[in-house]
Image (cartoon, rainbow, N blue to C red; front, side, top):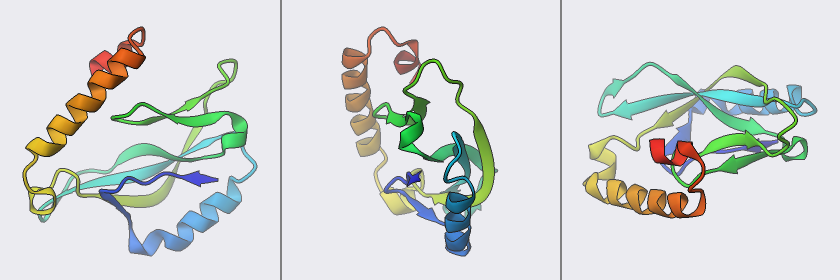
Length: 129
């Protein structure tokens, strides 16, 4: 089972064993597991949002896009099923106390999105980002 985590995220310390348990329970299922992502900005936390972060490559799932990455099913004939699990990721990628000057991150993302548009110009989703 693949577990995807960004460099500006951290697995909640209490959820280490939950990660192993979920991977074991869903190991042989054609499913994507959704993790609760919690954005941290200073001492504030927003409501968790679901993020597709665990999947099995053998079922055709793969990671796509350079920015706002998403799990997609490489087998276009199969619907992608997802299930939320109570595992938490803490995300501090918007916290100026952690990342400092946010303009670097914006410039990096714009450069990556321009490359994405060049490579995937027929996909409307890349223009949305």
